[in-house]
Image (cartoon, rainbow, N blue to C red; front, side, top):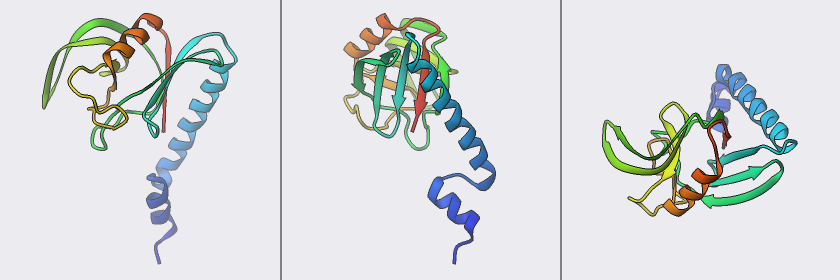
Length: 156
């Protein structure tokens, strides 16, 4: 027989101590979704389980694309964020990558960004180091549509 705390971890992926944190984050995301849908504000929703990004204006979806988000060992973090800087092109580097001229980059969580990806066509599959990859033409549309301060909600 598996102990209930171990079963909880197996089913949810969270230990008993972390479950309260997960519930709090879920509630924060839900509250922000409701507030944004009741506004006329532009905002971005990234659905990790469906590998989709939807651009919204209040309660109206205005653009939807298939994306690639973080791999299991380099996951895209869930939460409520805001675009804090944008670059038409930038260089991205890490321990095992160095990618020049990354197009239409919008940072929203530390080093995590929504950006165009010209180096793969695996959209719909989690293959990134945590960023949200979009086909370049879609990244341009999003870049032109969103501004610094645009809310970004990432959920499972």
